[in-house]
Image (cartoon, rainbow, N blue to C red; front, side, top):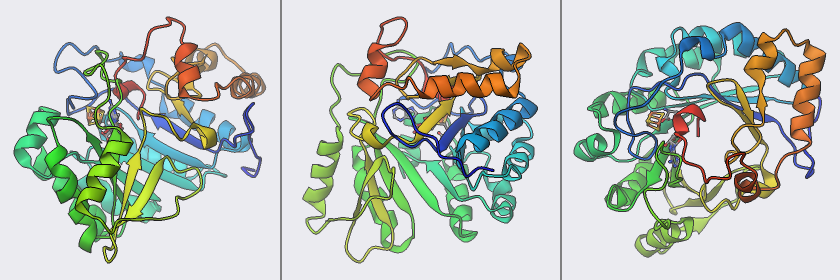
Amino acid sequence: MGNAKLYDNHGRAINYLRLAVTDRCNLRCFYCMPEEGIKYLPKKDLLTFEEIERLVSLLATLGITKIRLTGGEPFVRTDLMQLIRKIKAIPGIHDLHLTTNGVLTAPYIKELKALGIASVNLSLDTLDKTRFHTITRRDEFENVMNTFEQLLHYGIPVKINAVIMEEKNIDDILPLIELTKYKDVSVRFIEEMPFNGEGNHYTQLTWTYKKILAYIQQHYPTLQKVTDPDYSTAYHYVVPGYRGNIGIIAAFSRTFCGTCNRIRLTAQGTLKTCLYDDGVLNIRDLIRSGCSDEELKNQLLNAFAHRPKDGFEAEERRSNHKPVSESMSTIGG
Ligand code: SAM
Ligand code: SF4
């Protein structure tokens, strides 16, 4: 199957699932997790590979065609490649993508290519080893750069994700853009969101997408806007003559909700129909209570029929009425 079309209560198509396979991580990015005191989920609270396979197969019959594996760091999950092979074999799943920090990824790239992975998003906020350590609190810069080179070597489409933060990596914006000069890579600058496990680092976001764009335009006056792919969360630009492109993602300003085609499954098996909600369906407990496929399908469809219109409404509807502060490591970005 997999040819079904799924729409929410606002007429938006839903065809994309972002799946967090673990909440564990081998980095401690400043904007994502506190340095210490993180309580990881007990392993029994994660969906098993069999549970994931069942759920993805069901979602494929409803209209999901694209999956992104994320985390935490996906490669920290034992036997991740086994899960990737299983998902690739599910009828109706046409595109499998991965978001990774690149620390453990390099040895698997050859097989990812052979399996037909559609693209890899690599998180890399700086090209400076010292700043890398300041941001991620770990000394893994060389491993991440090796992953980047290997991805290019094997011809896997690569997008670099860089969260832009005052006093942290503003000096990296231009060097990251220069990567697009000779390499066919997309570099995406992302507004920082308060999903850091602590709440706001800032009272107001300084580096909004508008400010990021103005900064880039100031240094590249010939910057050209190009057409954004369908459902894209990024505004795309190119520097004329450069091979790659630049994206700016208004993740905090939430300018893209009107065409949002994505749902999320957190590491603990909770469905989110908006990044900013606090979970709308505990799928893990449903599955473990012996729920039939038919019942599961009805619960899913009901959740899709009550989607908030945007991230602001989702935040208002949160059960504790508090603004977001949970770590992105359980959500997957
Ligand atoms: N560990 C993998 C990685 O870093 O690529 C996958 C999970 S990570 C949570 C997914 C994406 O979320 C990364 O690109 C990361 O930069 C982004 N992210 C995490 N916390 C964020 C925040 N507070 N604001 C904006 N983006 C964030
Ligand atoms: Fe880990 Fe990714 Fe969060 Fe960094 S952004 S701490 S790599 S989950």
